[in-house]
Length: 226
Image 1 (cartoon, rainbow, N blue to C red):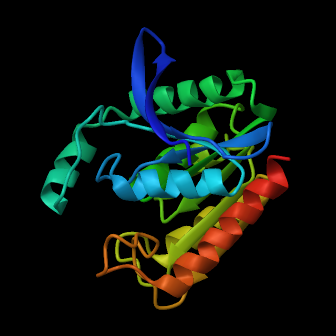
Image 2: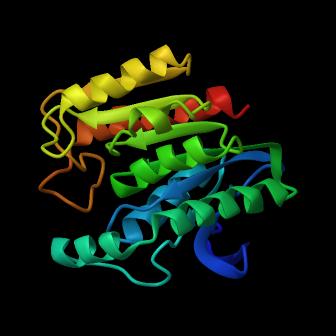
């Protein structure tokens, strides 16, 4: 893959990010990959490359601007210090940047996020109609007022044993999307906990659930970004 660090314009400043493009072909849809609370670590760059290998121009914004965490206390501090409004603005700037690229045709952009990034993906979709599809891996659902603002199709992928996001909350969120007429699908993986997709965290990773979720995510974007 042609993955590399870039900077893209974001209001009055620039935001770093990891951009990966497909090796073959001329025009592609695009996907924003939004980090977990660890930062723009190798796992996120690897997933961005996997998206490019599947035919998407993929960009992972570095919302911590160079900082990363290796253990939970560090990650928690970085996540708590993050200005969520600025993060959403930077994600939307990344969407606009991808839409401006000649190779992004049709000019459609999906957002994909894990944990903190999953919640940010939902918030971004609730903040702007520039988002064409959302895939949320175990991100905290929005409250009813913000959920009502979402128009983009939402795929939710959650673990049954996620201690921080009970199944009941996910089901309530799904019902709110149904009431709002938003196209959506939700899958709750039996026996899976939080971060089941992250193969860099062996204590949580579940290969079968991760593989199925990845297949569903790709299919979702292929359906709604064509």
